[in-house]
Length: 88
Image (tube, rainbow, N blue to C red; front, side, top):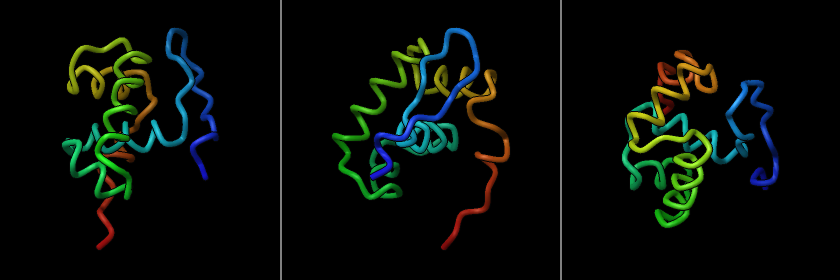
């Protein structure tokens, strides 16, 4: 699967995110709760929680809002990522 693929994050202080962590991160930035992220990515909610723990750690954040603000401020997630139309 894609879980081993790493996305380069060329920003000091931000650890490298896996492709799956980035997928979760984009959906966090769109405001989705864990159960909706799980449904969207077709993974278990418990797996989402593991990815979230990694995101809190890697982005040095203490809240979902903090994750989103840091990710967008660093350019790890772009406005285009969060404003894309949803496919039916």
